[in-house]
Image (tube, helix red, strand yellow):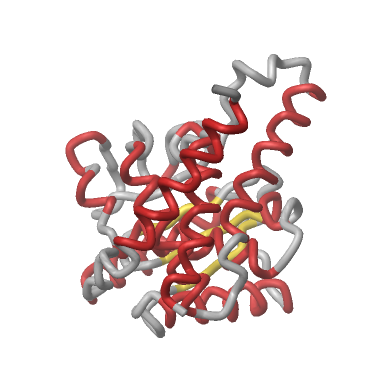
Length: 249
């Protein structure tokens, strides 16, 4: 069987499964005041650790897109979105729904839909409570909360924020956040295929970076992928979930 036929068969199967489970994703949990308070206390430290905040029209634009996604996720008015001044393509979420995205990641995006897909993916980690599931595999000192979804290559946050040893999200957690992200795109009128497009753009960017830095693109692990592993299957599944959006029409 050719690779194309195998991929096509997998895509058809995934679309069928997605259509069958289109409403099975979890409802948004309450974002507690305690989580919000803890996140707020850590906010300035986190901004400083990642190069400071980017203010002005860009920050307002990202926050507006983020709020639209948050409303689609059922957590409208309960999330805070910030752009940080780092050229490394990154995004991460803190319990309490504080979402951070770097200008480096914004630079490789091609549309507002792709921005919404990244923010939706991070909100998905919060909604699915992945931080709590990782409590036994990560350590944080300096703040009373577990940072979820850190995409930095260092694997830790130093200084006053403390130190976080990240072991990465599991395959199932990544799939769950991907699925939730596509659900939020659909709910808010964005292009549901943008999630797959963004994953592909990240892959292209990483391959280019590997060549520029004389690394083996096939073996090199990009910074963001150390905690958010990318695979061809994730792209295929994201496309399948987008196709399944037709089931809800």
